[in-house]
Image (cartoon, rainbow, N blue to C red; front, side, top):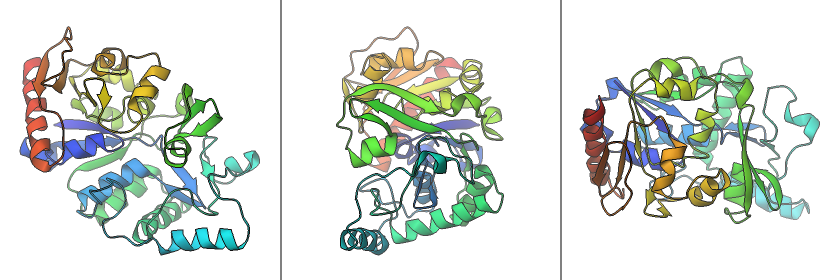
Length: 330
């Protein structure tokens, strides 16, 4: 049995090759929910959705988010309407008193739907409507995710990291903003001061998560700060990892991140923005998988391969390196 920790696009790309070593029946994925937001009244869980679409065979593999071939008529109409009505565009938080009105939410992750700052596809929107309705009917996020996973025909077990609200907040030179606002609306440009996982101290891992962490754990090449960090901030999560076998795949090629703002985020939490920083980001890791050209030397077993993943064959190569690392430490 193996459990993957997933967020962003790094681990999903790795999962494209997981079947070369691990059968779906013995695979569990714990997904980051620190990126979740409510947009125009709809509950959006980006990292969960990427895994749903990937497992269902409909993921847009050019962007690694959204549904392949999706239309965006509603999104375009919202922008047109806002312009015609002379309404503001860009990220607009609902008022403070509305952030936790009705359903519990962790300030700040509740946005107006006027001129959506995130592009939501029309078929994609159906998932958010269904998820939101299930939550409003009293389902937990885990239960809603299970229903959606069955609808997409997933063969692996997919667990959100928590049923409780958590918000990855980036404190920048331009003020505090949710990670989605920082990355999507501002394209990661504002300088970062600190990172906060609001709500994590009072949250709990979702049902089944700690049990899944008793199996061998693979941390894919996801952003260590905003993809994996929210999980590590949950009570008991890091402690559980310290008690099991953990293999971490580097999200860096030397000093360059595969994608996203991993470098500046690592600097913001006082970690070296390179493969070397994984030693402090993942002190519980038993082994690492790094690029064959990376000069890093860890005090733990290290397997080297070409870790760039541009195809399923690339993913299989890296997964086999992960399996080799597991064999070294189990």
